[in-house]
Image (cartoon, rainbow over all chains, first blue to last red; front, side):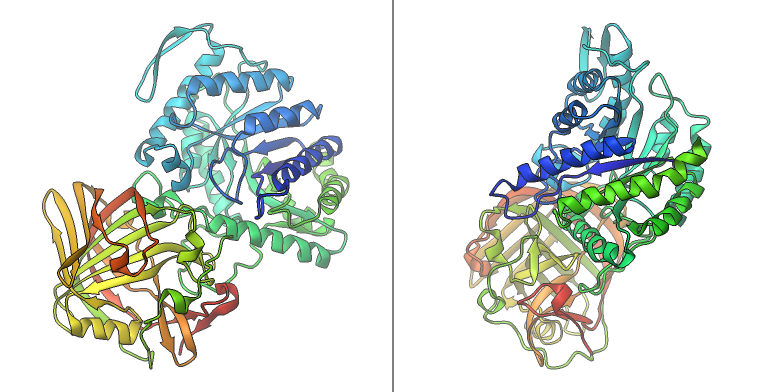
Length: 365
Length: 245
């Protein structure tokens, strides 16, 4: 099983005093350590206007910096928003190819369509059409990379024949993924031969159900690109400490802060009734797939199952359970709102790499 | 998270009194529901909420209108203005003001659910090609909204959220959670048009709807259940939520 780290780049208020630079600097230091100790991938989201929750609006720049200060770890767009009002598909293909070149062929290319009203309305994008535009992006971008010259007559964009340059280093192109928030998107991924990049994890039971159907469908997929990516990744939190109580003391509030920030996003379905968005909100990490009971506003969520918060022994057990479901990669959020001091985040990374990862690498070897 | 910055007693100096919570649920059959949403300027947004609530970003003004043909107090038409927010982590609407055309119904809604509504003229109209709500107090129009080009939806595409009402309870001034249950039988979406909005008339002069989001309509059978939860207005819901009864 592979392990990645995942960045929303959340920034606590107040925003002055250099806090955004601190968040970015801390993240880059974490990435350098993750590269040294053996993590496989660093992912970064693309979000816009999401105060506190995510200040990661230019992930291609952040990931370029990450690639320049590392030598081994793969860099993952997790993911590019495939909505034409936000990103023209040619620009997406160009930027991704440059990042693949600069990173020496280490790019993982994730695609998404944005799930908040805050973002879609900020670019005056139509929520009804984002699934269609995402589909058009993922069906055309591989051609821009693989064909010497490319033309397209489509719905969300058209272009006469042009050479889209440069071409990526990886042959035929970087592995392609789609972020999975709403149940059912993993099926869209499977049918197109795309990896399933979970960004709002489900419970063990829900993940197993989704995985089974994903595996079944991708065997008969009609790939949109030159290669099928049949990997499934899921999102988790990481805080590893030799003392399980200390791990909970720091890790659980971090998870809680992220969940509250997530719940405060103005999701598309809440603001704008549409059949194009099936969920009222993200499934908070680890929650079951059913709709949360809308009752007591004072209720806290507690620790969901499957979270990587604990001592190494506990984390080995939890990761074994994810592995047994057939998950190929677990990606970790390391911090939220800078609640955990940087030195402890780095210590957690190193401890996980030293005592948990080998349990999985040895078997693979 | 941003939190409200204005004491609830300042925002709602005329909060109604709820003496008891043990009432039987009230059925509201065949209610025509119309709702408009407009983003509002976020500059001083925290001033529009009490400390217990967190504004959404962007904040939205939600205009909620009901035409209820049958209730224990007779037919009534009701228009409310709410502000989108979170109570704890839950999506809610903070009641800014309301107008109702039936004084008996208005009295009951205030007494049992803390829904304070002034008596005025409320016209809730749905046509085959549009929907419209107009509200007037003392002869002055304080709201006119229109929805054009109806687009049918599935009833489960519509989400109706609980509201938070200021009320004086035996425990003191509280935000009570008003959570009707609705069984929707028809739904459609409209293009929203704001024809007139008098912020002073709604009791919140700083409220400026400035960007249309959506309008939708639905036919529903509703139930007004007894109140189950309240929160202290001065602290967030994780600290201040209370179970009633």
